[in-house]
Length: 330
Length: 274
Image 1 (tube, rainbow over the protein chains, first blue to last red):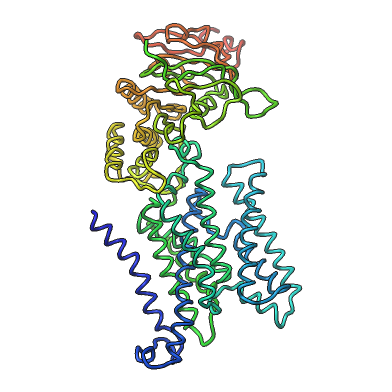
Image 2 (image 1 turned 90 degrees about the horizontal axis):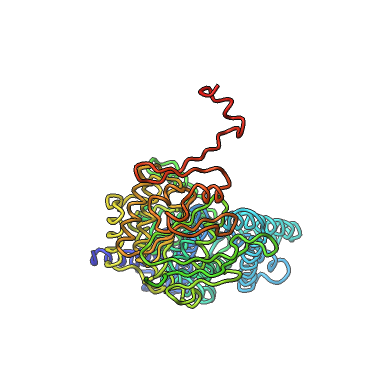
């Protein structure tokens, strides 16, 4: 039993590392697909490329996948709804609006765009939360979903206005490309900026993963089990929104990872969050890296990451939903 | 006589500060190792009263003492080690196995970052066994029938090992066989030393098991006392606001509601009397 657990943990940690290691050699230099080892050993440009471009980018893609998958899993449990994804509470549309606002009125410097995106992502969440508290009917989950939809719609309308106002030759393409999501501009600086938030958020969630089960019960039951429902829910929600906001601010809008990976993880490890959250983290990292590999090598240019994750995610989702073994809890 | 486990004094609570009180100046006490039924029609304030006993709601006035200590002097952890709740029903959206779900009952004994150990799982297994559903251990919760779910909910709160167990309408949506199983388990728990308080609108379930009745109507306690004292035609009719007759059948108290559909004229429509 004990050995089994250790083996599982080992596999969960090592698999993303192996995938990351292999991915360092994947790209379009010096020729498409695989870079021979000799290039890394002898070619100065090759070394530079791997160390300064591919490595920070791949680590970021792993953190991106990990964060979105984990945040998705957490939110599904907190909202007691398996169809929730991390961006749904106004977070994603808020980030898009923030990024466009910065591109239009401030600067296209990545760090400023990222900060603006992160700020508006959090504003989106807070708005959804406080509006939900004021809605006078329905359960808590329904109210959050409703206000999340409304806030997202307001931000997407705002985004529409910004796009309409943007200079179609310079600003508009910048906005559109940001919205499609991608990691082409990631440097070590970006990585250092997101790393602390992501690590702290993921550690909090990892440590409290068993408590998530308690928070997926009704408030009265959770309370009777000694859970500080409001406080613990807020802490975990804050951790997931923070990691979502920072990775989205760097990567743009990358959909579906947060919805699909927790589902696959539950299939593998069961509904108990103590076991499926670590699987989600590992699987999310692997999925993030592989999607970014595809984004880099599929064409001579760069395919926006958001397109790839949505395409693959939606196909997997459809397969899961229509497969015979799928059971819906309700 | 043993000292009361729970003492409720002059307790009031209202959902709406200007509206009627949901619970109005209620006082009673509960002795250890007894079963108390809070009996009354829908909307009498029974569930609200249970939530007050759980400290899920804060009373407007009055006090509740648990083992001689005011309820709000207990830490959240201590309280959850002393009082458990079996909710009326629970919607569980994820496919936990029954064992995983029951193990959640160990939360009061675990730190905020702790994960249940093998001994906790063992206690959960024992709880499933106590309610006779060991065979459901690996069954996902959404695949359980209503009766099975009720027993698993009960097992989860046994796993909590509380001194006082609150049950919200534990039998109201069960068929007769499952109702009897639940009442038998409650009886076993009482004999094993647990104090039970349950709300119900079913007087017969109360008559089968309760040592003491708290009759409620519109937020007020009309009567408290033993079955012999308060389970009468007069008090039950007053509690339910309809004509109720208490009969004895084979030494058991059963209740007949004697108002027919159509009210006063109904007798004329009855072919036997025509």
